[in-house]
Image (cartoon, rainbow, N blue to C red; front, side, top):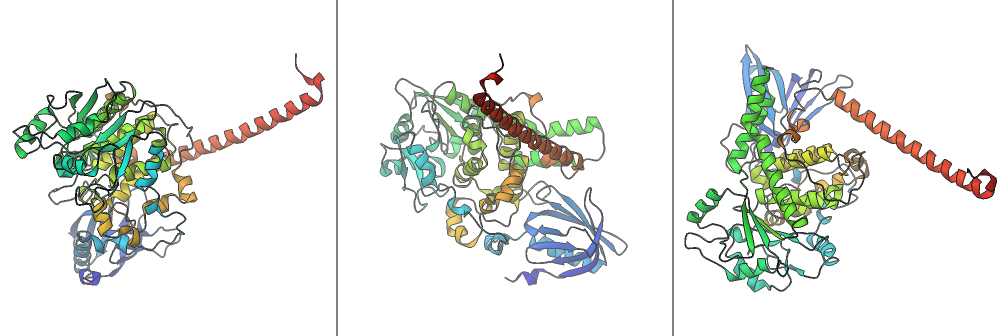
Amino acid sequence: MEFAELIKTPRVDGVVLHRPFMPTVEGTLCLTGHHLILSSRQDNTEELWLLHSNIDSIEKRFVGSLGHITVKCKDLRVIQLEITGMEECLNIASSIEALSTLDLVSLMYPFFYRPMFEVIEDGWNSFLPQNAFKDLESMTDEWRLSEVNKDFSLCPSYPPLVAVPKDFDDETLKKVATFRHGGRFPVLSYYHKKNGMVMMRAGQPLTGTNGRRCKEDEKLINATLRPGKRGYIIDTRAINVAQQAKARGGGFELEANYPQWRRIHKAIERYNVLQESLIKLVEACNDQSHSMDRWLSKLEASNWQTNVKEILTTACLAAQCIDREGASVLVHGTEGTDSTLQVTSLAQIILDPGCRTVKGFQSLVEREWLQAGHPFQQRCAQSAFSNSKPRHEAPVFLLFLDCVWQILRQFPCSFEFNESFLVLLFEHAYASQFGTFLGNSAAERARLCLPEKTVSLWSWVNRPQELERLTNPLYEPNSLVIWPSVAPQSLLLWEGVFLRWNRSSKCLDEAYEEMVHIIEYNKELQTKVNSLRRQLAQLETEDPLLHTP
């Protein structure tokens, strides 16, 4: 298919662009296969380059022959275009609709994008499982890297290499895979260096109504326990939801078959409930009525902050079991590709200072989201403005980033990266020129040949000039476990995402620049103090009479 077939009018002059808190721009609107571009001949006017894949929905209306197109984006931006002439306006609107709803992955922009920057580090090779395993080997010899899923046939949503207990061969793993949803047998998620406890993740056990059991599964997860120790199974579903899953062939671990494990149910919402929550939150944030009661009631009705609280509470529970109780943990929900990953990745941010660095966080996203099988293509197909009925869409990754921001805000000196890094990941998960978030699993990415045909987001992020922009000036390495407060008073609305297009950021930007200036000035003064101390010490050694009594 040629993109030209979908573009009825490729260019229109005299289009007026309205954006919040930015001057009105008049210029030429051009449609390409992947971008909506508006450029003006006015001096000091920034061009608009908008990916069609970033467009969630459009609305059109007419006042006489003047057409108004409202473009609502997946990054929650809303812009307006004024186009003279009904026919041209309708042509532009229908072209945008067609280009922004293309489903064929191979037609997406990452396959056509050619970087204008020098790729110093190939992000596709930056976080390979075998490299992460070398770090694990330096701490323990109780685990091995299995190639049982090297052709993705055992578990379509797992990567080719997974860490499993050393004493279990691949044939045993194959038996366990038949007992777990989607073949997602228990694999290592995190090893706690301090006490040797581990966190694993999996899909739900397929116990069904007959209470089916799998002795290999029982042995596998028991192998992670220390003598005389108990473990915790954290099920991210309410007990009634887990009970209902039995009727569909799913279920949960029965106490009789797993006597050394205590099961805890924590209800984290899924799919359409989360999508509806995001829609209501964004609607509240865009409400211009300025009524305090209306704003607060809409915010509460969205349940977004409640979802943030539940996820953080469950992650804190997992971290507490590992660090304070000295117990190993197995986390699963139904599929093990959504709420499970939220919990395991947030628990690691709480426990592991390495995950709070820029590279460490990238590695976490690769390991616990991309390689672990979170279906980004499905979950991020729509954002908060789409008129289509949600199918598999849900802001699971955005909720995770929101939780990270909450911890970052409570511990502003413990993270090497800043809020801009989290916002950047949100934007690229929904629409990007990079191939990192394309596809729903490692298997799909391999089939699409993404490392050969597209550029990795990490190749862009890890350039020195970009790292400088994403680095937290307040950062001081903190080797301790950090325990975030999950009290309702401690959790705030993430304004950097949900309100950034609704109000000017000028004052916040100026305050941030002033903070950076103060920190730099403080470093200069500290350097001078150290230099003067060295000079004084030298003088004292040369002339003992200078010693103060």
